[in-house]
Amino acid sequence: MQPFKTLTALAAPLDRTNVDTDQIIPKQFLKRIERTGYGDFLFFDWRQTPDGEPVADFVLNDPRYRGAQILIAGKNFGCGSSREHAAWALSDYGFRVVIAPTFADIFFSNAGKNGIVLVRLPESEVETLLQNAQKIPNYRLTVSLEEQSVTDGRGFKASFEIDPFRKFCLLEGLDDIGLTLRHAAELDAFEKRHEEAGWLKAKAATSS
Image (cartoon, one colour):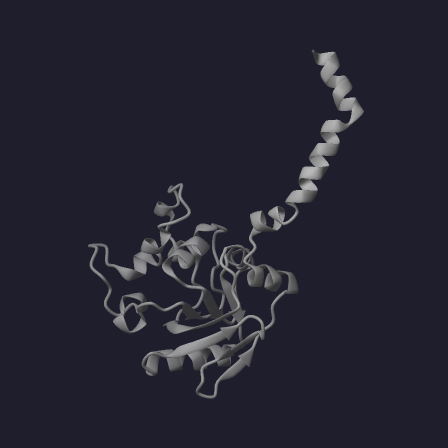
């Protein structure tokens, strides 16, 4: 998982509330066994018509937001099913930050474990960011995890709260496996002690 310190990037406005995980990554793509390639299917049903034609007015099809790494959305982002594929799709597409007033709890956990910084801001501040991203060409934000701040270089500044342990993991680029591997030496020593334990040797001898 890539460490996150500070990101300055283009922001894309998704002015919708209650964006559920089935819209983030539709169920027909969940049968894939890889954890990569999901970005192509992010918001699949919103990005194209049933005939496969691009929806011109959808934000991800707008050339102005090509390469955006910060997504601004309405409240209750990530609601619906608990599929971790939603976080995979956002990350694989290139989003490293999602800003919204509220997030669904399970999605919030999944996103953090996949290196995505979720920033909760008051609705009024999110509305300001949405409007700015829609009206100001090449609107860019700086998100500092270290300072827990969001700024735009135009006078907007906001701070956000984050759990200290989640912050540590994101700063260090540690997912669950990475956290475990930090204790590899202790785990190896533990296994060695068990291998050398007398009762294990006695059991092995009896079995043979």
